[in-house]
Length: 356
Image 1 (cartoon, helix red, strand yellow):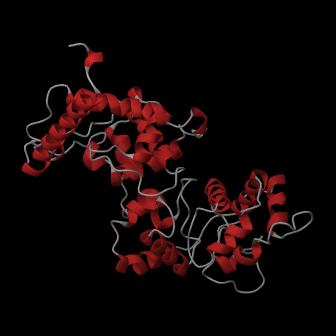
Image 2: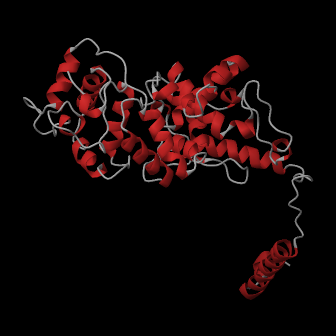
Image 3: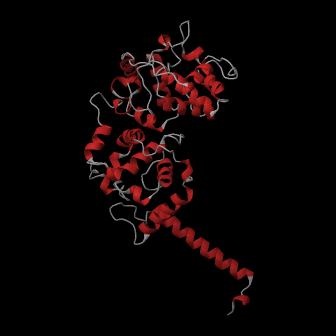
């Protein structure tokens, strides 16, 4: 019988029968448990290849353009920040230099790979996509927040892994003064320009920020991971510990960019379109609300990134968040850089002690 001799009714019956048979087969697999999901027995031949090839091609297709990668991706500060998060959120499955994967992890299917050579298989953009989105049916989670900028330090760390020794990894991730000090330094005096100094902040502001991270009101995958290890009841004590450190340090030499930032902070000259930053952040002649943070002596790269997040409108935070959305929404990149230069150039100080 030739194909043209088949009438539409016969074709329809055959197609419907095939669909019914497929549905019955699927129902038997799902409801009678005919498919063995045991990780001990592994996949059928070829399935692992299909899944991994699909994963690689999916990451390559959806990775952002290389132009999105920060220019400072190979800087020690970026690598150090990524190392802190990797130690907390990733090493338990993937291991690390000098840190073996546990026997239990090695029974997962698929086994989470040791990442010592992952940067040889994936470029920076692909690593970014994988870390940010996670991988279905592999145990690899998505980044625990919406922010994309925080993912790049982890990429920086992964790219540095092939040359990293166990001693170097230990130096990046160990601290004698507690878990928070891995990133924030002893007493909250961070030396990493991408991590905020906490010694200049009040107890109330630190507690408010930690509570916002804990609830998700302030968006940060790094801090969401860190706060998942901290009970809510412990937040006041942690805030008090960091607030107990007296700020130290001196002002930086004045530059033209410092002076431009000062004019913006004081709403002088042609900068009246920008609210006077000092009305909330000092220097100010009257006592200021401790719900506002001091930013005198704060690291310039950190300040710049926060202002860019405020400008985009997706930073989140405490009760005064709406004020910063309005203050930052019209700032140019040049103004952000100038403001960061001004406040980072001041001597580190608490809010009501800020002076020029």
